[in-house]
Amino acid sequence: MKKSLVAFVLALSTIGAGQTTGAPTQAPPATSQPQPQKKEIKDPAEYNAYVGAAQQTDAAAKVSGLEAFLAQYPNSVMKEDALELLMGAYQQAGNQAKVIDTANRLLAANPNNARALVLLAYNERAAQKWADAKQHAERGLQAIPKMSKPDGMSDADFEKQKTQFSALLNSVAGFSALQMKDYASAQKYLRPAVEADPKNVENVYPLALSYLSATPPDDVNGLFFIARAANLVADPAGKDQIKKFGHSRYVKYHGSEEGWNELLAQAGTTPLPPPGFTIKQYVPPTPAEQAADLVKNTPPEKMTFAEWELVLSQGKPEDTEKVWNAIKGKPLQMEGTVLKVSTTELDIAASSDDIDAKRADINLTMTGTIPAKLMPKEGATLDFEGTPVSYTPNPFVMTMEKGALLTKSGPAPKKPPVRKRPST
Image (cartoon, rainbow, N blue to C red):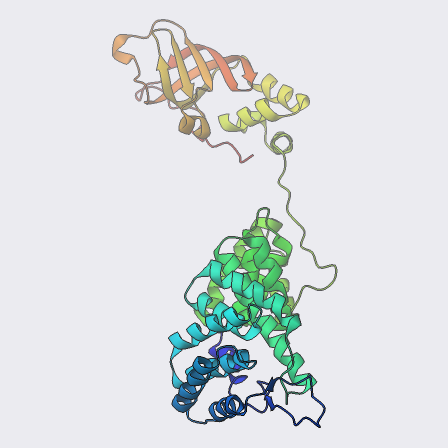
């Protein structure tokens, strides 16, 4: 957020008492008709004190005069105008603490003073006081439609002023909401801020994050604006970082990088998603579909144990039947991790997932008693042979008989120890 915007707010209070603050009129003679559209100061001394202070060009003199006026006339009809001028005078004097203090005094006089709310919201955002910044920004947005046009300002300039105020307050409210992980509010406020200034990456990038971080995320809008931000950021390192992040999220959502470069090009020339804009979402295959694909493309004899497990536990009946018929009753040699031992029976985990979970997926009955000197230890990796006789699909356990230990000096397992199941 640029400091020039705050300077713009304060400039409204420093142009002159006869223009932006609504110069008061002195009480008219009895023969004159009153002008209700202007604020009136009936006491000539009060009038002179106000005008004298407001027309000072030296910041210190202006501060002194306005503070004296407010102390002497605390209930003046020009109190709010004087505080607005004082806020600008302190800014000219470089006293930021007093600018904030005066803004709070201004809100005490008028809780809906938009200029004070803009200043407080901006400064609280800079100080990372997110809740306060969001509250003042929201109040400011509600106050803008009620603003009175300053005397001497054209209708066009007044509308421009209100538009700039709205953009600034939407930016503050949205960014503060994003920091508070209130993603719905962040989207609510940042979207109009981006629409008001589509080239301001300080709003575009947070808007993208608010869409992508929501639960559930709005990936279509989020990916468009992350691509837009990648086009707007000037720093090469920052541009590359945003592109990598956007590419990663795009591939995750779409299933491939197809179309990513086209989206970058489109977002470079189009400030907002066009009507009907969409990105096709990748829907991963179900476990049953993965199993069917495995059976279609890989002979059962060449599948890993983890792939048998996937088909036998998740596949359709015709797929499970094909795989089971291919391996049932045939001696198989493989590798696994021992989880439980007895003299005639071993519980083994053969897939990587089950090894990590310490869950047995094979129950192996040996051909005879295991000699004490060959007894495997729990947790050890074991090469073994067994003949499948049955299985339960869920939770998956394959029962094997005719078990035998394969020693290092004996024949190597015919099947390589590939143990990771396909992702489901």
